[in-house]
Length: 348
Image 1 (cartoon, helix red, strand yellow):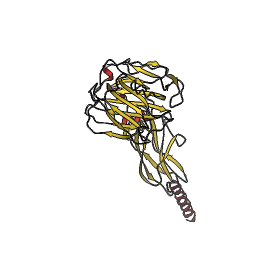
Image 2 (cartoon, rainbow, N blue to C red):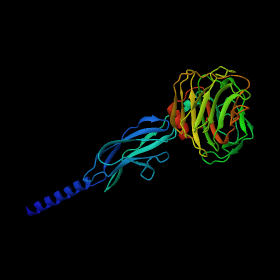
Image 3 (cartoon, one colour):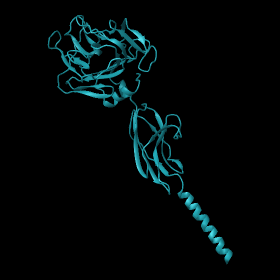
Image 4 (cartoon, rainbow, N blue to C red):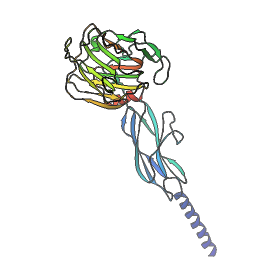
């Protein structure tokens, strides 16, 4: 009888130890389905369903574009601690790309993972929709939209871009430009212009579409302008269709001291035929155009597009600095598309 009782105590002790060991383990965590999947982001959720006897001191997500079983040695984000549901929006991703994601949770007994979720970001093929012209400036001034609106180089020279890659942007020395002859395609009723630039001086024309012999025959102009009495930052203007009239310009300035010299800036300007639009600088909307003053271009044979200036003969305002990745669309781009252009190197 004594032996039986002893054996029972031993078995009970073993069971208790095993149960305690199971409680003294890393947390149990689940990886839940992703939501709000976009071209450059998605939201992922996790759930710590069991902590055992040891509190969860860290939880989060790991992900990889190449490793189908990511761990904390890959991309990682800490989303706090404790038991229960949690989520995070992973950003600055590449469109139309598969990512492998796991939830993880840690305590003083170790780290555990949920199952791997394979998430594919949505496509940004929409950026090809309505694309009139796109100038990568990768060794030449050709138009990569397929519309063959190639530029004619006058004095501009190849230089490094914002990623410091050689022969991937153009440098303008204050008396040079790249000209694109007038085309019906360059006179849309709705327009968006996206451009990266790095200006060395104040008061210089980034680009202008106009008759260079007449300041009134113009369609649009973007100027890095910190003069005119007090710092203005950016001058954006567009035509009203009253060519040869003194009343053919809608001109507005951005915020004071908005754009600095000698650094790369991303500028997006857009306006539709009803006079509604916006201006974005480096991914942030700084102006909403709501006056309802209609945009109407001057579609004249002499109204060429000049990258780097001049504005017109009597006030050339040539650009000095670097310009890269200029795109023109015949529609208003969405905020998501602008965000993508700001965070990625778009190639048609």
